[in-house]
Image (tube, rainbow, N blue to C red; front, side, top):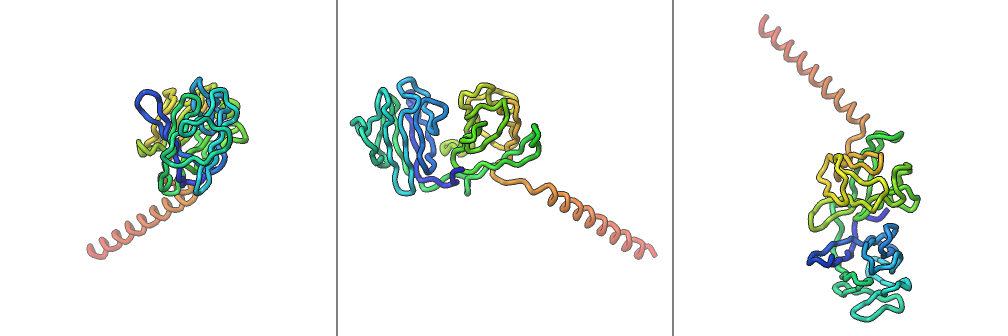
Length: 243
């Protein structure tokens, strides 16, 4: 799992006058059109495994992986690993991107919670930490859910800084991603939605973890006992006044 804070994000030109922002977690990230890549840019000009981005606390390095159409930094084709400075442009194939520096990741500690609604693990709490979490059946997924209806890299849960909201994105999965029964490629999560990955259903709980059921049961019992005690006290006062 990645941490909830990050210093860099990738601004991707969608070719239609808009941009898409992708938080970059620390570590070595693959870039390409393959859905197996941590930074998936589904454009025909990119190779399946096109380049790598290496992110540390104080710098970002970019390197081409012998791609067909090349990776260009500030107009020059990369031939070796190069330091990528914030505000500078890198073109992967024909996709224009820019590195941006941010202060910290979203949502406090960057952790969101889901509850499994079916399968043998029904009722289990699933937490996802970091600006970007890949959910899938593969052991390399950030959040592994080993179910035959789920693809190896099925979907991504990430934070959208422009929308100030967590989102779920399908990664061209075989059996699809659904929010409240509707198939989606990308959807904002506001709280309480049922997210279905293949046949596996999860309820989105937001950034606040629910109280453990045992603790909730004890709390309800205490409230009931307190209510009964107050009732008996009021009844006793009533009889005293009546007498």
